[in-house]
Image (cartoon, rainbow, N blue to C red):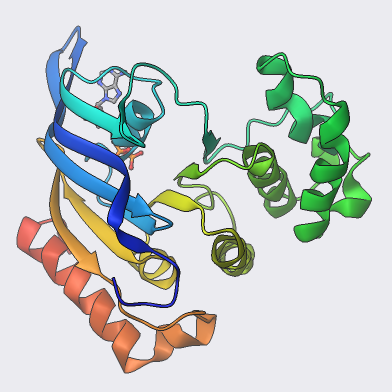
Length: 266
Ligand SMILES: Nc1ncnc2c1ncn2[C@@H]1O[C@H](COP(=O)(O)OP(=O)(O)OP(=O)(O)O)[C@@H](O)[C@H]1O
């Protein structure tokens, strides 16, 4: 792909092939994913955008090895996925911080799950906190922080092991608009500096366009990828860009897909 973001079109870090996922529940079977085929390129920022219940979280959870696919194949770095991939960070809408542990100890928490010594990671953890303007909060507790600060801690925690792939499930969905804007810009900065591959779930057309190389628009009943939209706006993207005709043009193109799908009732 010809942009200046370091994305390598030829190399797919993640490949999904003919992926189906059916949930069995008391109320019958739910086809949450139908025939999903998707490549996530090395270094790419790809957003999944779609109405509630279209299978965004299911797709992310299947990729994270937290959910088993019913059929099809998921490949990460050329290996078929058999469980949670090691080289992975995840951020959810709820920050999942432990209120009885300090900010620093929350960032270090995944190492304990992996039974790795935390000692060599204290400095990198503090450095990450510094990057997100949280260095002075390292010894505070999550309940002393704002929602935006808490989510920054959750992002630091996901980045600590320097994963190649970062999965983000509506990470800013519960935040106020100004905090969300700030975190969008911070995330873009981290992404352009590190060239991580990011899969980002959002309900916001504007957020998806602001941050992404490509936006995969999903539809529901059954959950599927309807269309993939390339966002060829220059980097770095600024909040003010949202007012430009080019940005508005992209947003209108995505909105049209939703209109075609009957996602808007008003
Ligand atoms: N554990 C489960 N058991 C049964 N059905 C489920 C389960 N998890 C999800 N579903 C169903 O699968 C479909 C897709 O759900 P999913 O949470 O992936 O959608 P989503 O696009 O992430 O929704 P939202 O935007 O509201 O978070 C929905 O119909 C949902 O009810």
